[in-house]
Amino acid sequence: MQQWCKPGEAAVAYASLIYFRVRDGMLINDWKVDWAHEPLTHSYYETDQVESIPLPSPDSDLLQGVPESSPDYIAGLLYCAYGFTGLRLITNRNDRSDVYRSMKAVKFGRHTASGGGRYCADFYLVESGRGSGHLPPGIYHYSPLRHVWETLAKGDYTHDLARAQGYESTCERYLLLTIDYWRSGFKYNDFAYQATAMDIGTVVGSIAEITGERTAGTWDVWINEVALSKLLGLDTDRTGIYAVQGWGEQIPTDQAKVAPGAPQVPPRVDSDFQNVMDFSTTLAMQRDMQEFGQRPATFTCNPVPNCPGARGKSRWWEELHRRQTSFGRFTGEAYPARTLTTLLEAADAACEQFRVATGDGQLEWEYLVFVSNVDGLKPGLYSYRDAKLKLVQDDPQQDFLAGTYFLKNYDGRKAAATIIPCANVFEVSKRWGVRGYRLVNALIGAACQAISVEAVRCGVGTGTALGFDAQAHAEHAGMGKDEMTPMLMIMTGVDNPYAGEFRTDASLMWGDK
Image (tube, rainbow, N blue to C red; front, side, top):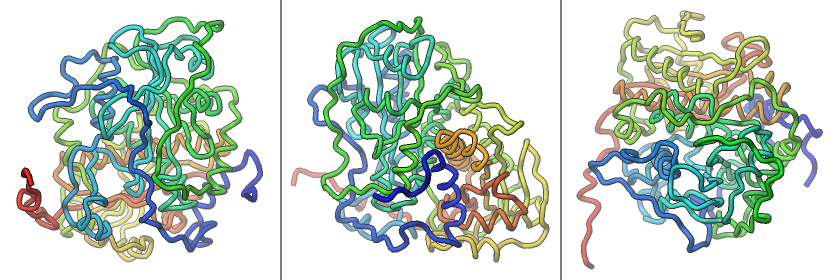
């Protein structure tokens, strides 16, 4: 395959490709989605060695009585974020008709947003066997379908991971978050790296609803991808390792400790078909990840503290469970100005999960806010930064918004306000390469998830779109792309509570025949 860009320049080149994609197009512009050969919605390993985890009953707290750094606790968090928690039966303006006609194509609800609904994250645990929990030392994969730890290799590899990452101390266990590119690429081709880039952030945002500040500053995204991929038996061209998080008590990293041989990890099953394609953009990004330079101070992080310093909202399960996308259900009615600022405050709080230095050429973000019908605010374009909402343009913005979004799954004119998270993606991509690009997108993903859950608490709906004209938004707001780039479009509004609803007890029947 022809090399797409010069080595070491992939992150900036890809950010430019996304920024100018409406004007210049992508590398592939005539892609047809082959739904008949869709990859699996979750990966699994063909192993009969699994460690079961209790599922909650309808009236129980999933995490109640579970040691708060144990493998069961971590699995509980992953179930809350990525578990299959119910059927999505509400009709909307986005899903193809097969979703409503065939059980094979039916959508299962999850508590976390995902780019294009592809849910490309996988979760691994490297376990020492020390401390809390009953899991033997080994390498495990979490199955959201079965809610089990699938055993991939036996033995303590935590010191290997710590050495690869340059940690002076080794935790009892490590959670690793990965991305499967083909799970999104079969639908989005070259756009897949962008479509998946925020999925790590949305997972982090869901977990933060439960853990609160306890997990802030614990996600390590300065990854030695080559070494960790060998540990997990993954192909770096097709799977990216995006985050590592340490749990449990620490001991000094044993630089001489030898693991029980190289782990013999079985192959991961991602699809029933052999139609996997590699895209030149993804290959370029992944090959730039092979260089593991000295860790910048910005990327310093800590393990999850054993004694939680803070917890999330008390009704997190209900609020996560009610989170969904408002495809075509906005009424055009207004909501209060305080609701809008509450959503923006929640987004900023979620960004603290990736606690990094700001200012002086570091990671920065802000929000463009297009107000159409918000009680107490004049219609127009606002900016929100450092907890301040500032009016930028005081003329109606509906026509501009309608011209920058091209799909038919939303009616943006009926949104009360549209939020555009922005970040200095070009600056951090130049400074830190692909790792910087990933960090920016993870941060925006966490903000997106926080807004969608906070909207449930406020009684409003949200709809998020990756497919919009970022260049047009930047120029409209007077932003230079090298300083601040629009990353995502989040429409918010009052939903029609009856749109698309029907009696599910009349359509779902159980019996012996």
